[in-house]
Image (cartoon, rainbow, N blue to C red; front, side, top):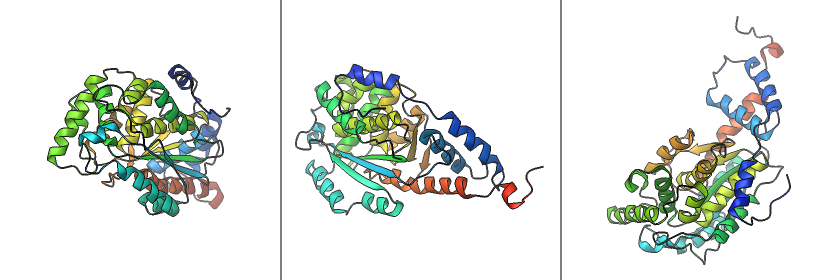
Amino acid sequence: MKEITGLGSIAELRALLANMPGPDEEALAKWAEREPNLTKPAGSLGRLEEISRHLTAWQGRHPPRLENVRARVYAGNHGVADLGVSAFPSVVTQQMVLNFAGGGAAINQLCRAFGMELGVEALELDKPTADFTKGPAMTEAEFLTAFAVGLRAAAPNLDLMVIGEMGIGNTTSAAAIAHALYGGDASDWTGRGTGVDDERLKIKIDVVAKGAKANPSKDGLEVLRCLGGRELAAMAGAILGARLWRIPVMLDGYVCCAAAAALYAADPRALDHCLVGHVSVEPGHRALLERVGKRPLLDMEMRLGEASGAALAVGLLKGAVACHAGMATFAEVGVAGKG
């Protein structure tokens, strides 16, 4: 696949979705031949076996490996932050980007712990998206520009991409996307985010409801454009970009999965290469994962964002790869197999 540097239209984006590669069947056959012969009862490593199979399928190699893992955190600012939906002002987005650069955030420590490269992309922080209670958050050009930033993050030598975000007000955006896609009451999808009090939570629920009403489309890409932010568009781009190179992806929390859900709404195959690192305490996250058919690997009561839950789950993936690739077979050590 040739590198994609930009997108001219949403129609061009839809064409990319229509031509996504599938899993590598030859690599999967090798996994299926080895796994039953490892020195353990079949299925005894539970979801670790599922993980090694998933990585084999989407890396297109057997055994899978996790030597080159890239974490990407996308940062954006939201017009609805001015409506009082967050406990923090929008300036905190830029301050946290500087913290990432200085190595002082949680994601920096987790990337060091698990041997991951970290990159942070700040997307026009001085230009928040529009107030989506009055119309679309982004023009088509703004949306495509942000989406293309994510598309360019993937590279053919990567073993895994870990995706997350930073943006004051973006749990409001995530809730609005989920509400627009799946209906129900705005309160079903809206949580406390950065820790808002009861008064701000009421404001946030009202903003989510107004946003969905002002932008009634059910089309996944249009929902993402109208109710998302630049960082959500970039995360969706990174998910698709990884798929085009057949790179497995680890998704983070509610905001990341809301961006992913918009892709899923556009094409239900779009998340086949994705794992979900954790389920956050945001009340809408678990319900959203059910809608897109994903089981989280961890439930650590986290709600930080910045790819922290996804990064933590990389430790599980490394364990899965080590067991599948490194364990002896029954024949190698002379252990009697199942009779």
